[in-house]
Each structure stands twice: as C-alpha cells, then as structure tokens.
Length: 161
Image (tube, rainbow, N blue to C red):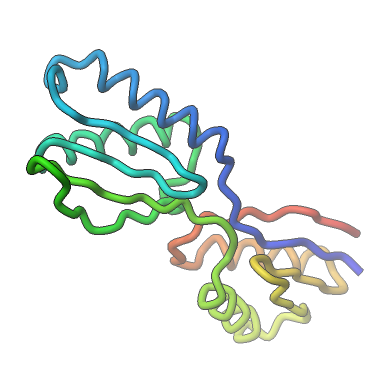
C-alpha cells in the first residue's frame, strides 16, 4: 500500500548559517557600531540581544532576510515576547520548531477525515503517516495539507508504493 510521512523538520545547519550571516551583517553595519547586539543558539533556541527596541526590530528584519535566503521556512520560528535585560537592553527568544505538535496533528487528521478520502492517517510521535490504496489519494492529501493555514513548515517525505 502506498504511504508517505508528514513531518516538520528544520535543518539546524542552515539555521547556524543564517545566524552567522546576521552576525556578519551586524558587525559591518554602521547603525550597529558600538552596540551590544548579539545572537546565540542553544539547541533549538536562538536568543536575540539588542540595546533598544529599534535595534531589535532591525535584527528581526535581518533574521527574516537571512533565514529566507538560506531557505529556512519562517513558520518554523516562534518569536517569544521581548524581555528586559541588564543595562536597559532587550532580550528575545526564538524557538526553532521541530516536529508536528499534537494539536496540529489532530487538526490535520480531522481535515483529512472530513474530506471522506479513502486514506488512513496515523499520528506517530512528532510525525504523521498517511496510507491509502491509490497514489492519487495521497497526492490529494498533500494538496490539502498545503492549503491548510497551519503555523508549521510541513514536508512530505518517504513516499512509498
């Protein structure tokens, strides 16, 4: 029986490359001279540090630009609220999402079942396995998932006949 997996993975090497690009641009730009702006990544968490709100918004723009350039989907980033840090600076945390969370997985299963297609969707940890008798049904499920307005970057892999 044909099947495929719905996953949400972000390549952390590309995240590192994008962060290094942002750091280089911060070091070169005139409006960041003498400021204490920095980016650090610990596992799936990126910490932004800026002197004030204006510089934090500038770093956001750089993050969006460099992550898009490195083909990292921006839906894989979860921006937390900025918080005060030492010396009047601002600190903000970005979470790099890995895996399909349970709420999104349930929503995908519910939408697929609502279409009455002859496929089965099984939640397997942080991914979903879709199986069906026809390859065309599986391709319709992929189309349906792309049309859903989820805050996840979905990939479809491991297609088997």
